[in-house]
Amino acid sequence: MLGLLPVCGCDGNTYDTACEAIMAGVPIDHEGACELPCASDADCAQGEACWTPPGQCDAPGRCAPIPTDCPLMMPAFPVCGCDGTTYPSVCDALLAGASIAHEGPCP
Figure (tube, rainbow, N blue to C red):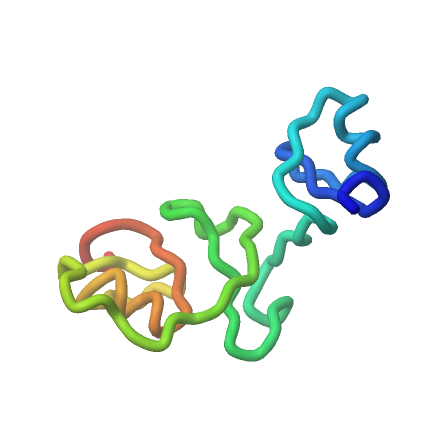
C-alpha cells in the first residue's frame, strides 16, 4: 500500500509516506527510498558502475549495471571517457564502466 511506505520524491529526497511528499508539494518519482548518489565505482555493487551525466565527470553519479553487450545499430564515433581513455564508441566506454566526458578523442 503506497500510503504507508517510503517514497522517493521527484526532488531526490526520500519521504516517510506518500502523504508527506504530497503535503510538501513534491510529485512522487517511485515507491521506496531514493538511491544515494555515488562518488566512484567503489560505492557500487559488483557488476555496477557509478554513472555520471555526460560531460559532468566530477558530478555525483548513480550506481547502475554495466552493460554486457551493445545494440547492433548503435552509432560508432570516438568518445573520451571520464577515466581519460579514448573509446571507439559510447558502447565501448559503457562496457568498460566509463562515463562519458565528451564526444571525440581525449586530449
